[in-house]
Image (cartoon, rainbow, N blue to C red; front, side, top):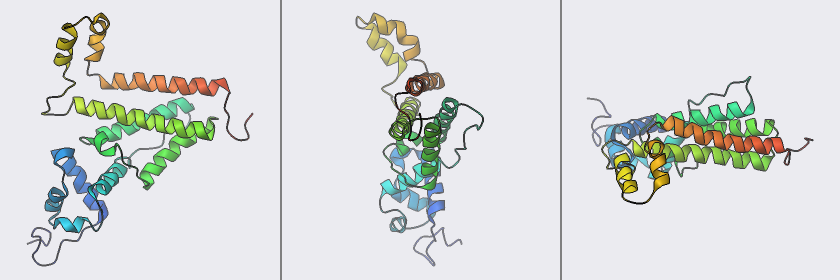
Length: 228
């Protein structure tokens, strides 16, 4: 019998941080965030729950490690392209990484990882902006704007598509609510408001965000150190 299959008998299962995060992400995909508990994770690993706290002081520490792992496969943007295209590629890659896991955006939101994958993504985004001539302060705020928009959009996208929920975003509920009152502008916009083409929604918002950054860049009001 495997030593990991019977916690409390024989040698205790040996844990490592990386495989624990892998198992946690597998449980996330099968159960969802609400049902991901330290006890369930321990049971899946064949250990006592207390063993997990050697690697993760709290569940929030575990979620931060999971969020960090989600960004592991984000690759560098296309080299021979303009800064705005590279920035858009990075935002799209972040959305894809979060969508890869059930409730991925919920896990990621509110975490503040200082792991290598998170820092590499942030470094790449900031570098794209600084090399394009944005001042340090603008580059930092643009990084936060891109990340916050991407996480926020994906959070709403996954909530709307969450299986088994009586979602507040149910299109039929919105149609009935709009039809019950004098909302002609909402009636006109209903096909888009109730649409599920979340990629189109994301691209529209991303386009607006990058348009604003492009306007700031072209204005020449703020330049990085040593630039004319």
